[in-house]
Image (cartoon, rainbow, N blue to C red):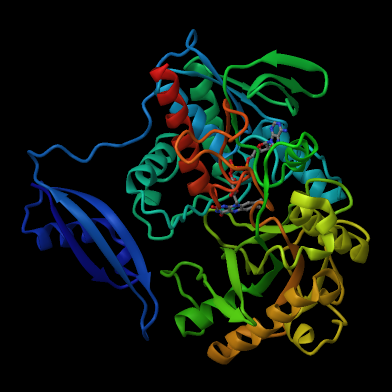
Length: 516
Ligand SMILES: Cc1cc2nc3c(=O)[nH]c(=O)nc-3n(C[C@H](O)[C@H](O)[C@H](O)COP(=O)(O)OP(=O)(O)OC[C@H]3O[C@@H](n4cnc5c(N)ncnc54)[C@H](O)[C@@H]3O)c2cc1C
């Protein structure tokens, strides 16, 4: 029987793997030949001196070592087809799950493969050119590819969490993600992993088609019979997984235009906050400099202001603020960081929950009112800056309602324009952001600084529309062979939950097919 044990150690000791394994073996009362699997590593920085807590499972030499739970693949070249729209985490994990269940996935992606996509990101950052099919949200790997790759989830479905993490490691992620309390991969490492997943899908007999935007669903009675691509080609389909992400506005418009059932969904709107990383380290580690053994520190903040939640979101230590617009004429910001998180700045989304009360001025758009509200503030940010340069304001100036006379060094490559951030947000949102910053600065005085900036607008936090699905069959209530999946239809929020929803939907669909 393996034994589970736990030790605590200093940041310096945490770098010595051999020493830790020896401590875990000793704790378990086992000899030098016992094998150790780390289960969790977390950092406790609440006290004066931060320390690590490491738990592990120790196996005697004769016991079988814990096996990887990555998805096993089989040859599906001649198997029944399932069309999957979107090659984000939801679509790619759905494809792997289809193969593992003996179905042939055909993945349809409007954007380009990671290498060609990178060139479009370079023109976006350097020349401000937004390609509506290839950007930080669209293209191979979806919004997850050029992200921070944080793999947090509040889900308690340990089985699926382990499957997703083990699968990512199988395709090239660092095994530390299997035990880190807050794992992340990094923008520099994600594209290679995504390419490996694509190669595995193709090698097993599946298909991945790029530059293929689904522009219409041809329906008969309660079924989608054909998909239309790029407004010029049609293909017959049996079943369709719809995993198009939170920014696929044309898909939401198709449902609205064709009077297929969708619902208004709350989301969150606000800004990206950026501090020098050093300040966040000083606050969290209560020291002048972080030193060599501690990771760039992060934070997670939640405040209630006038009855609404204000919270930090997608915090990127050592990160970069990215232009995440998906069409010309809008400014949208998000954040990423490289695997080492060694940049000079720390950014996070700092957002307020918004719902139908806030969307009231856009009531006439019916179920698309949240989308129109979101789009209005993104266009407003563009009007204020006049380009994809983003409007920004120093934090203290924002709190004192003064436009900043200059802006500090920052990570946003296209450049910032000094503006009153209140002009690019609804008043109820900017007031609550101001209220939350005041509340936080009472607890963390150093957080309030004019070295920090607010950059607008952080608006693609989750989908503004829900595409409903049957609780058991997971298909759309009116289109019985269409399976809404991942973040776009409102069933996930982040890479892990999107990937897990991809597994869930593909498994449900394959199970129904095998029952027929
Ligand atoms: C810069 C950035 C950083 C982020 N950082 C993190 C992070 O650190 N951790 C985290 O958990 N989450 C992060 N996120 C969010 C995360 O990426 C998403 O939650 C996740 O990718 C959602 O997965 P999905 O598969 O549901 O949708 P998406 O990843 O959005 O994928 C949808 C795919 O569908 C394609 N598509 C859309 N419409 C069509 C169409 N009509 N035809 C064909 N294809 C279509 C798109 O091109 C896209 O590739 C970040 C997002 C961004 C933009």
